[in-house]
Image (cartoon, rainbow, N blue to C red; front, side, top):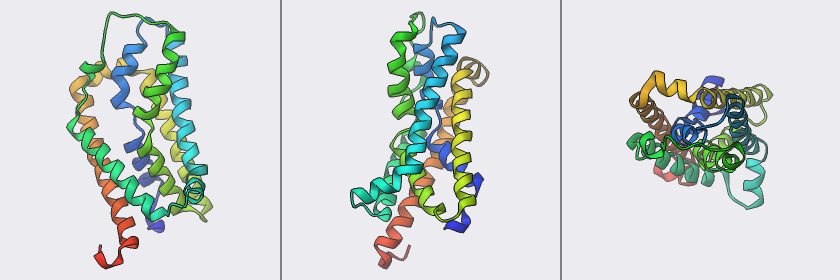
Length: 213
């Protein structure tokens, strides 16, 4: 599996589980009444919190598994289940933008900072699915400095994308509309579901070789 990895595959995998489209409604809600400069700072804070989660998975994910005595293959199965459930939830789009929006209410910057960290950055943008995916990718590229650098670059690129989406969230919603974002969320959800099934298959193949997966 290691030799099949590429920058494109790793980036798409991270994008599927660390995108912030599903948290746009909440972000737009809490950023109402803020100045443009405050909205930029809010976007930066949300992005940095998400980046910390992704880098923590890259640098410490496998060490945490070893500390708790959890095999990577068992983690693949568990992480795959998390991704599969997340993908199904995104495909069904159980929570729409309308449920998050509360227009006409203004907020102050100091009051919304906690909300932009939790739940917007964690876990709506980066959560258990993100941590699982990057930890598994990190194991697959271990020993290959070039692929490891590509994984690191994919994380940075995704962080940049998260910032851009938050920064221009209102314009993005205007251009794509709620229907467009809902469709995009469903498409990404399908990819997330497939990634989860793939991780589960990889783990089960090692844990239960008799299954013939």
